[in-house]
Image 1: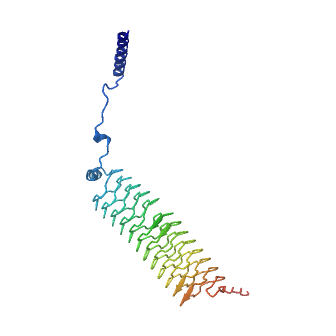
Image 2: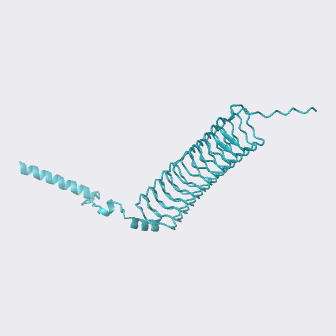
Image 3: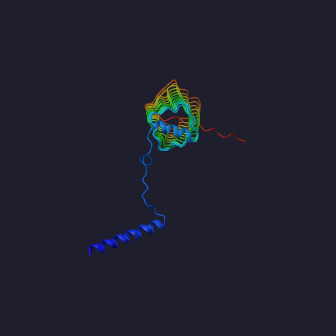
Length: 318
């Protein structure tokens, strides 16, 4: 009885095998080589692959020298470039989204039109780098060096950045609205015509910076160093400048409606033609200021009195 059952089972197996072969099913399983199933993590080989194909997503390029390389339009998405040397590299329109560029050297690199969304550039060196038109959404720029970098017209809306160096950076026409910039150095930077509405620049170094014509409504500049800065024609309506240093600051033609200047240092500040209606200057230090044609109507002045309102001109009789 057992012998007959074994014959039946063997016959069924043979029949099934014949059926599978008839429909093209492989007789033997395909075994992938280990090199096919695991990615090559050798940085040098991956760099060579990038040079050959201009594509190396999710690659390990840690510490690799890519200086002065032409990588225009390359796909390096999600790659590890920690400590890599990209000095002077041409990275126009390159995809570096999600890449790790911590401690990388990108000095004088050309990143115009590059996609850096979600990239980590903590402590990266971007001195004199060109970032015009780059996508910097959700980028991590903690401790980054952007000295003399060109970010003109770049969208940095809602950017969060701290302890960064942007001295002499070109940010004219950039969108920094609702950005949070903690303890940043913007000395000598050019932010003329930039949108800084509701920006947080508390404790920032803005000395000698150019904010001509900038939109800064609701900006927070508490304890900031604004000495020798230029805010000519800037909109600082409802801005918070409490305890800020505005020594020799040029506020000519600026809009300071409802601005908070409590305990601000206003030594030799130029208010020529500025409008500070309903502003609060309680405790502010005003020494040798230029108030030519300035309007402090109903402002809370340092002496506790209300600022004088300009007399209305009577209409001449016809």
